[in-house]
Image 1 (cartoon, one colour):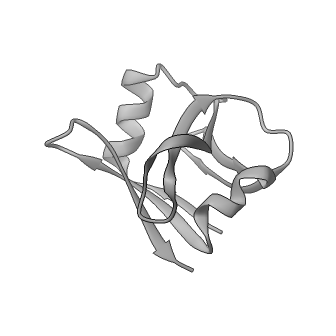
Image 2 (cartoon, one colour; image 1 turned 90 degrees about the horizontal axis):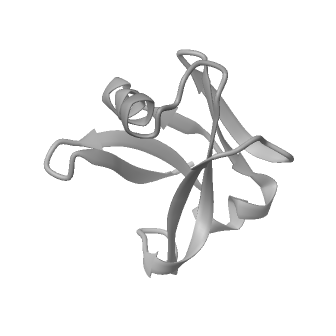
Length: 97
């Protein structure tokens, strides 16, 4: 599984979540909502330290990761985080690996 982010998405995390160099951002499965890959679950985001990362990437000194316990949610898809101008926030795109 791979994680990628657009430059605009990175700026959103820096500004809205006050993420700075050396910080870690976790993507995780949360109960409720729906997504393109799992009905009844949606993607959560938090500032957190990795324990057992299954996928991780670094962009501008910020580390983004998914824990091993949340890999099931992605169902064999890579995660690309773009920025949606209309929603003024991240747009999570799932691409089959």
